[in-house]
Amino acid sequence: MVKEIERAGIPVVHMCTIVPISLTVGANRIVPTIAIPHPLGNPALSLEEERDIRRNLLTRALKALETEVTDQTVFEK
Amino acid sequence: MLKIVHYINQFFANVGGEEMAHIPAEVREGVVGPGLAFQQAFKGEAEIVATIVCGDSYFNENMDEAKSTVIKMVKEYQPDLFIAGPAFNAGRYGVACGTIAQAVKDELNIPVLTGMYAENPGADMFKNTIYIVSTKNSAAGMRDAVKKMAPLALKLAKGEKIGASAEEGYMPNGKRVNFFEKDRGSKRAVKMLLAKLADKEFETELPMPDFDRVAPNPAVKDITKAKIALVTSGGIVPKGNPDHIESSNASKYGKYDIDGVMDLTEETYQTAHGGYDPVYANLDADRVLPVDVLREFEKEGKIGSLHRYYYSTVGNGTAVKNAKGFAAEYAKELKADGVDAVILTST
Image 1 (spheres, chains in turn cyan, brown):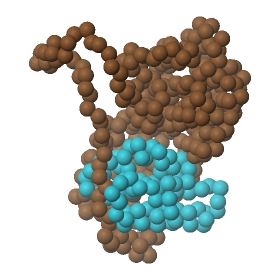
Image 2 (image 1 turned 180 degrees about the vertical axis):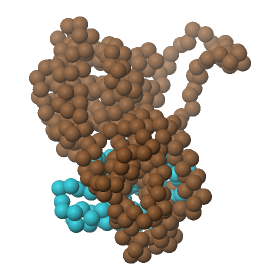
Image 3 (image 1 turned 135 degrees about the vertical axis):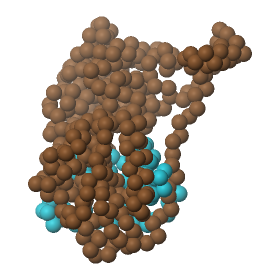
């Protein structure tokens, strides 16, 4: 799906936990996430802490979308 | 007697389904689950001395740790062969089987074998470096998988010469071996041409590599003015799953209006996905589809706007052809709606 969106001419960032799969399917902008059943949250934390994590990850996703890349890039930070 | 160590996931070990996918690796003496069918097929030539059981989520979320633990377990037994799976079309299981088999081969220098469906992401990742037998896409294909894997397993364990992929049943690994054909090239080419002209089946001797890569689009110039759309393969749908998106092998996707929706709650949204423990997403679907924070970003001016619709399907054993078709269709709509960028989340 990532590839088809990219093919349509829309920049896309893939947020997922298993980065090797994302690389294999051909995503170009990748942001690694927390865990498979809750990529953008962590039920072990308080709701506020969870929201902070989500804000951080999404801030990184926006940064990825604003960054020119020529090849597959994993945005670790 | 040849000694084999077998790796399987929590499901095939009968420990449990998704709710047990978080369990770390543990070792059991002897045969567990599908190992029994292998053991029978070995007809006394080989024995599964130990079975390592590990949760699929655990392995994929803690890859380095899981790898080193499993390698230590395998080493204890000094087996002649390591078998992982078969994983069929279970994505995390396939990636785990490929990763651990590769690691055992590299670090312990033991022959390894695994099996999975051709579309399992683990296949593309590892088929060029380890033997992966091509299986059907569900556990209903276990008998067939064992029938193909067991003879190859014995050959590998004995250190015998392995024939071509077409003879042994493993996925082509890109290696070429010189040999003499019975018929000369011109004759084979004419035969192939005649078959093609008659619309009959023929097999090319030089398949073209399948490099389906799409170059990255230019970056978004000003994200604070951009219209951002959300897409997910994590199966987030309005409560009740109005489009009846299947929990696996999805044949459709949903398009949902989130105009005015500030937060996804337990009462209003859920996941339809059957391939991960749904408890956390059902309690708070923002954990998969982060509408709440994007609304905050919208208000704070960090993004221009959040697109009115999000698109969702279940990425669980879903055929690549289907997923491609869904996305090709909704990407056109996104483009037409003036969406500048997409955030796609996966579980």
